[in-house]
Amino acid sequence: MSVAALVLVALWVGAMPASAFGAQALPTMEDPIAATRAVRLSDQLRCLVCQNQTIAESNAELALDLRQKIREQIAAGKTDDEIIAYMVDRYGDFVLYRPPLKATTLLLWAGPGLLFFGGLAVLVRVLRSRRGLEPGAPLSPEDRERAARLLGAGPTKEAP
Image (cartoon, rainbow, N blue to C red; front, side, top):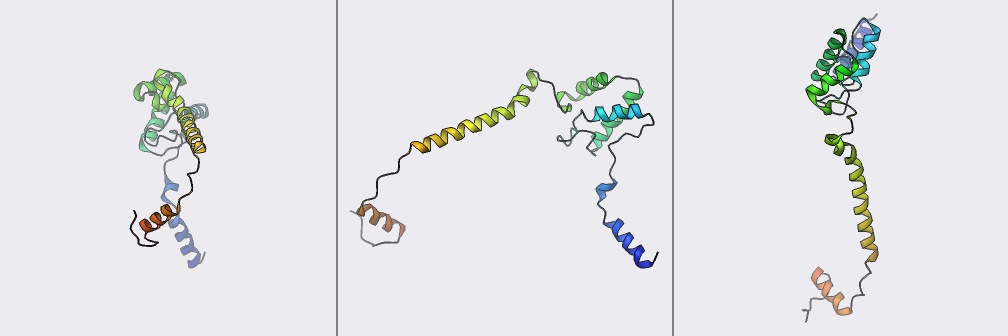
């Protein structure tokens, strides 16, 4: 390779974003069945730092630790349900990417629908109230002259 080609390669490698070298979400287990279980479990748990990503998608340190904990528990012979129960006991239902429907999560499940229909009701009410408004009576010549004076664009006579 020529020197120019080496310089171009060096610049190209140097320009790569640092995130390309981040930790991978895939487990590095030798057992493919255990690796598949770890990925499936990681897809069910929310990253508590990112909150909008699963721990499989996140590169946050806590997500890395949780993925490691999942791998350790799989190696210890725990079932998927036992691993999920451990995470819920430790972090609460919030760690589940799809939390169960129960009294403590009811607002979480119903909240978006309530906000949507509440906003829709307000919109309908505002539109109906505007429809009922009739345009005001036309201004008299005196009112027009007074408005022009107040706005500074008309005769400067004093109002009666």
